[in-house]
Each structure stands twice: as structure tokens, then as C-alpha cells.
Length: 108
Image (cartoon, rainbow, N blue to C red; front, side, top):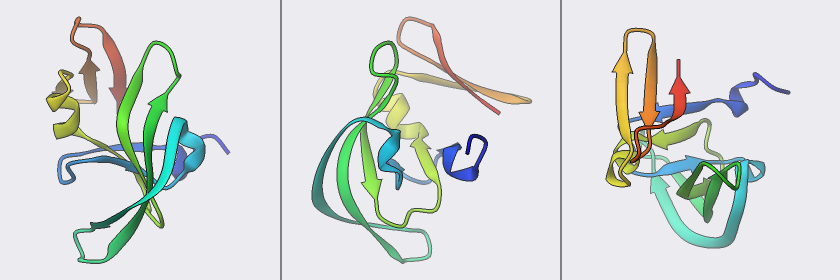
């Protein structure tokens, strides 16, 4: 169902990696166990794979982890910045620009 919490992506500055538990979010995913991530409460999530989310053509986010049991979809602000994206926070939104200055994501 659209609008469901599992469809939302949260911009996060506490994690160093993009991650989701929903395999259907991926345009391309390689399934392989890659260890565990540790949450802020010291619980662990099993990494089941790594892939690309996006529409498959004009905008994609690479190196997204597929994590078993993750409660929210997370986009890492630091990982975006490391890949050349610019993240700009405004009073009621967050704009993410690609290296060419095009807005590629708008957060609320």
C-alpha cells in the first residue's frame, strides 16, 4: 500500500550506509550474506545482500544494504555526500542535488 511506513525513506546521519529490509525496493540486488550491522541499541541485523535502488535509468543509489528485520528504510547523508551529492536542509524540506546541480530527491 502506497504511503505505508515501509514505503518511506528516512534521511539519516547516524548510519554510514544506505539500507532497507524490502527486497522489492531494488532495481538490482546481489544476494549474499555479508555479516551484520549493529543498531544504536546494540541489537544486530543480518546483511542479506547489496544492490541499487532507483528507477534503473536517470537516478540510482548504489551500495544499499538489504538487512533482515530493519524497521525503516535509511538513506545515509554521509554516504550521499561521499558520492558527490549535495544535501541542503531548508525549513520545511531537504533537497538532494546531483553533481550537476539537478535536484534528484526532495525530502519532507
